Image (cartoon, rainbow, N blue to C red):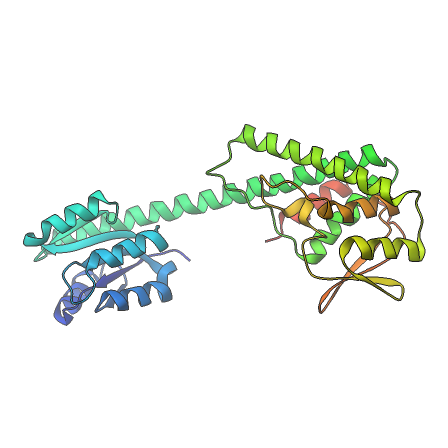
Amino acid sequence: MKPEKILYVDDEAMALKYFERLVGPLAPVLTAGSVEEGRAVLKAHGPEIAVLVCDQRMPGERGNELLRHARDYYPGIVRMLTTAYSELGDAIEAINTGEIYRYINKPWELEPLRADLKNALELAALRNERDELMRDKLMAQQSQLLANRLAALLMVGAAMNAESAPAAVHRFAETVLAVGGTEPAVDWHRWEHADLLQAEALRGAAVAGHLRQWLDGFGPQTGGDAALQALAKLGGGAVQGAAVHLPPGDLLHALLTAPAGTMPTHEQCGWLAWLLWQGGRAQVSAELDGWRVTLADAPALPADWLADVMERLGRTD
């Protein structure tokens, strides 16, 4: 939703009507008669609001309190304070503390008022465009991180068991899709590219160590009840007939979806290790209170299976 409305907050009913009549031809106007009402309008219509204009002197809380609230919770909204000349010091303080873009003197003059609001709307549109571009960039970077992790799991898995690694990693990726795993969270304000690469390399090395410990513990490959019992034990689940019931949790996807900068735990590596041990011979389905895993034949994989699952993982929200 593109924000394009102006919210004006003033305790004087005539001022609200006058503002709406003057500014209505420029943009849709929402109004509120107090700081409390202004917060409620922001909560209900925040994504629609491009500009917030607030009177300073009102009974109860002053206008700068609402502007500070908008700065903290709706940073994309362009904030403006309207004051009488005698309250100019409040406006200057609000500018200096980053609460507002600028102030408008009362009483208003029509053309300067419209010009100021037109500039504010243009600034809001630029901020919205910038934010959308940034969201697109971050989504692409997060998808790339997820794809890099999947490729790293294949390489690490192949070092452990070259024959079973493709089927195991394919089943792991298909499970992430089935359980609805999300792309790894990345604080892009924190991570430089080189630092992130280093953190992911250390993460991959840790995964390799945990997988080796699991595989050494499993011993020679075995199927049937023994395989199901091993999975139930590592996942905190229970064998139920010819299947294992696993409780909800991140066991089935954490190796791909854990936030950047976090190291994998031994438990989080257990599912992939079990798939390597079993050559990917598993099928996962959802239950009301967890997941059901059964033994199944390993699928025949096409040559482009890795690119296919990377693309599909990149389309998940």
